[in-house]
Length: 280
Image 1 (spheres, rainbow, N blue to C red):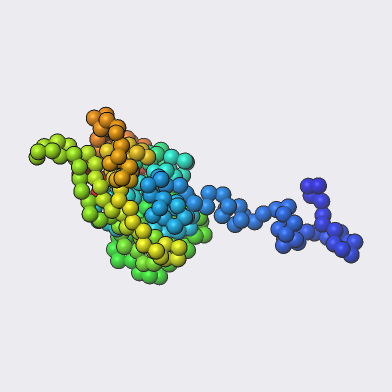
Image 2 (cartoon, rainbow, N blue to C red; image 1 turned 90 degrees about the vertical axis):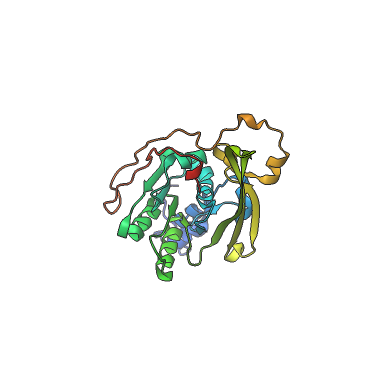
């Protein structure tokens, strides 16, 4: 019965010991509940083979190389979790707008941008890990190993995922795009419609074994269809004349509260129109 005291073997009535309650199954620790509910955030199916857990494991740190295709891959990693209600934040990426993210399925109403944190980069990222499930951050400069360990510990404690756009010491999973080939031009004219590239994944622990996948990123469509395996698309018979080109999403302007962290104005929705050239 609720509120009933636990009676020891000697017969005297005493208060229940926490360890005894946990063993009995009457209650569960907050840590147990936290790790059992949503331990892995979803990603789009073509990206699952690249990640050891088939998704974004809470408490982990991923790095995405700031090379050709890196921005598109970063957005694609956020899309599925954002559509299922996860809040995302992006720090230190002044040239990235909500319209670009929306093309990959990131919900504008659950995306906060801190374009220029300045010298407050470290405390801003740490504070955002306290309240957001997914935090994308581009370091303002060289990253010291000690600072990287502290932010990784913060992500583990809060059950958040830190996605770093650039190099990061000892990331759990490191992703890099190589061999990009654009499609869509014919006889010197036309529109860049989609890009094939190879995504390579390495890391620590379960991610030690190198993995790779040849993907269309972007694939010339919006949302989950913005990422596709090259082999699947090559065999498809869909009429490509109806395919939405990159930059089809209209600019969106949404404000997600101002000045919540270290005096930094947090704005979601710069409303910047996006073309193919704006998506890395």
